[in-house]
Length: 428
Image 1 (tube, rainbow, N blue to C red):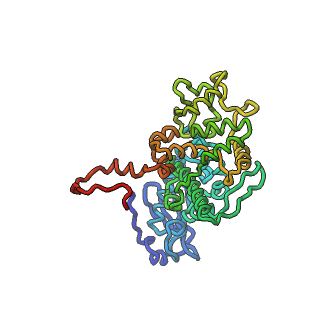
Image 2 (tube, rainbow, N blue to C red):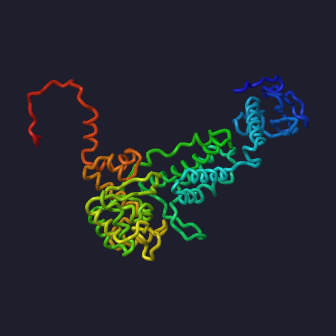
Image 3 (cartoon, rainbow, N blue to C red):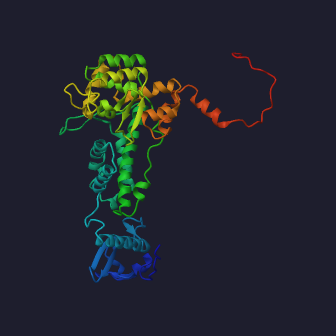
């Protein structure tokens, strides 16, 4: 870390008070080509940085107000030592600018968000549309115009709290004014809004951390200091009973019904099912292949006898490249096509708490868990990279899962002497 230099004229308020007011700053060189200046005015002083090189000539930057009257805060009001650090930071930015590594204009939060989306696409992210929607709906219009270097902890915390206090948005047609649900008043409703705020904070932090990694900004304190809401991401898995699942299937439209059956028999996601072709089904192994998954890893889903019969009927007579679950017009189901059919089917099936398509995946996994299937097996079927997510959502549904895990892992200490008393089952 560079050494902070001393100067008898500029170190303290008392020393600066004795200086005469003048237009030309009082300069103190702190490194080769870099000097910090103090300009004394009628209402206080300001700090200025100056850099000179034969290639670029003299360049100046206003660093902030001096702490002549108000105590330094390290951001807008600076002591002499803080002014030196701010000057060095400015000089490092000049060096990157001269090397063509950063833009000459201010790098805003909107630029950081754009770079984050581009990087997500480059790395093969599967939910680009969802990421862009979240950014445009909740982050860009609130924080996008702020230069990253001016972003403060308080500003981020205010935005984060506002998201939690704002009702969730309803789907609206493109170009229309956004509509909102009623404000959340129940504990579960408040938890969900805070959970949403935390997910958006994660997106913002990822964008800003990428900006720091790419040397677009120096400090990271503003966003690293912002903490998410606690204890709001506890999973509350919603799943259908067997009777509800049957009613839902019967209530679906003719072309949507196979998609729902496929989800209930495999736990596959909507997009995975929509992309499946006849060639993905293997009759010999009784499995179906998911080539494009959310996590980017392909997997084989092993089917029950019922599932094998169902997929065999869907694949019969089709070319290997033909869709297993086409729409009524032969086209592919897109993301927007799922909402109305599932909503109408829930209404017709008298499922009072309307579900989204993803609940069918939860229904599949929950049914396995409640029948004692090991978490590792469920994780493989769902395409989870390990059992952590599976256990988080479904372990509480598994009979004796916790008890069996504890007993298998803890072993025996051999500290209890053998007993002659044999307990009688059912004795109180």
